Amino acid sequence: MPVNLLDFDTAGLAAWLESRGEKPYRARQLMRWIHRAGVSELDGMTDLPKSLRAALAGEVVVTAPAVTRDSVAADGTRKWLLSVGTGNGIETVFIPETARGTLCVSSQVGCALECAFCSTGRQGFNRNLTAGEIIGQLWWANRALGADLAAGKRPVTNVVMMGMGEPLANFDNVVTAMRVMLDDHGYGLSRRRVTLSTSGMVPWMDRLREACPVSLAVSLHAPNDELRDRLVPINRKWPLRELLAACRRYIDGAASAPDRADDEDDPVPTGVAAKWQRAGSPRDFVTFEYVMLRGVNDTPSHARELVDLVGDLPCKFNLIPFNPFPDSGFERSRAETIVEFQGELLSAGFVATVRKTRGDDIDGACGQLAGQVLDRTRRRERHEPLEDTRA
Ligand code: SAH
Ligand code: SF4
Figure 1 (cartoon, helix red, strand yellow):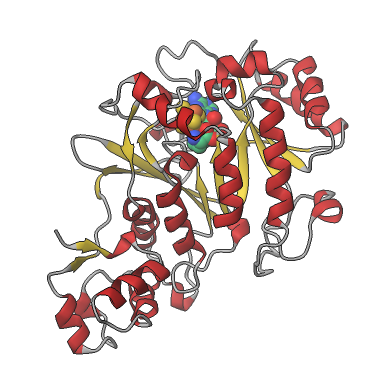
Figure 2 (cartoon, rainbow, N blue to C red):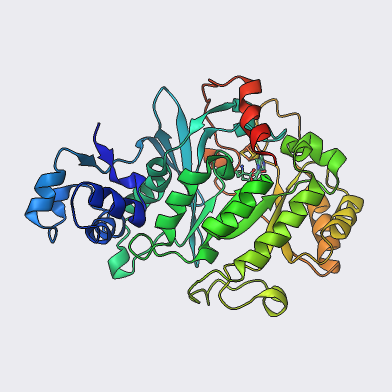
């Protein structure tokens, strides 16, 4: 089987080349051809020595998952359905806005964590995506959107790991892919522009801080353990007290991460910058995502409980109107309820935004990715690895 060069970050590719008796520094050249220029054929990599191209011929490929559907919504949101074998599909969504273009990337085929309001969770878990399948979504999107990174034509300015799956449950592959996103020989995105969203896998949040600090979003969805146990079952393993402590550690650790200050057009929210932004950090606050479920977690008293819960933790809130799906058992909160909830957070001095629903006509909204996953894993097995790693 040929090796897929999309599976490597620069360090991994250098090590692989070296193991084959090649010069490790060629990795940087290869990465630039593959990711910055979007070239998939060795013949197109014109400044690579012929001897290296000949040595690699037939041994390597550059292959992203095949696109089986490509839909564009009335608001410009674009969704690709990608085939990852055995009849399974994953989705990648591109959300263009005036000053930025955000790509919502999947990390697993399905998800084992079974959050009550999530259609991916309903579908069960099939398998982790490889690093190549993860970075392949950005590689493909850049090609499809006519990117020319060398010439500064950069349609994707931000990546959010908010598609199908729990990214921290596929830690190594997600970190490898995110390193390519950040690498100047890859996509050169700043750490502020790459966001990982987790349902709260506490030990892996600490590891992420060490391995690849990027902007962190945490799916909170409830202000107390009783409700969160029900909505986000992983809370039974790592309850709110532990989750919030991990958020605090993440922010402290992130402060020493190197970064470029290239985000003048994407500032941290007013107030947050002055209070918390420290030189060299990706984001010195956590974004809490909070899905708005009618009559479940959306009353003003829930909002006040949330304010008490987070205390002085540097954070902002992103309220997500629930995206309904068949037999979900939940309804989206009314618009006026969401405004009232937001008002409680604002008046307590927090930054709180309401996520716009995008691409409704193509089921494009993050967190509601269509398609059935063939669930190959029994429920008990799914939970065992989590038990094992709990210290
Ligand atoms: N597994 C990760 C990231 C993927 S989901 C996580 O849970 O954080 C991205 C976001 O969409 C999460 O905040 C998730 O809770 C939310 N989400 C899931 N289903 C949703 C739905 N039906 N409506 C609105 N948001 C949803
Ligand atoms: Fe998995 Fe996230 Fe969906 Fe929960 S919300 S089931 S963690 S994808």
